[in-house]
Image 1 (tube, rainbow, N blue to C red):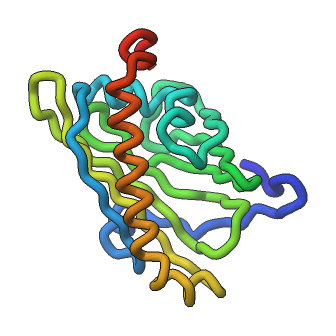
Image 2: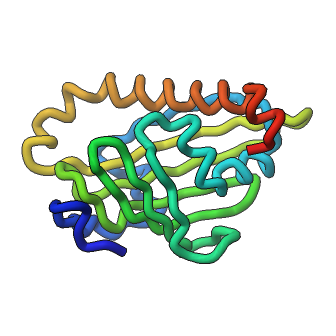
Length: 177
């Protein structure tokens, strides 16, 4: 864990569990069929390098607990704009479900944040993923959030399309991650 990021102190986020992704004040859901098996998809999600290739805001991912991931595993994600988040995993069932929440966040405007990825095996090397992002905005962000709903949902769908594009790329097919 870190208590500062650059000059900005990190905010301790509310502790939430898996039910939060269903009950959070703001939830965004994206779904897609991806051209890899569920197990292969989890290989991609475990790779710190792969995240940077499909999530434009991510600069670096560092696992801060031993691999392979499991419930309770931790990592730090550095994002553009000098923002950083410490995460703890609430679910990690290879081929089925991955979920995490922020424990600390160097940005402002949220008191709780979690993501939940549910995966179904469609056979023939394909997976269906349902990705839910859940958050509780606070302060000025809480007032602006109703106006940002459309942009947030669109951004989530765009990011999932980026993942599909990456999984179809020559780089992925050649290098494997």
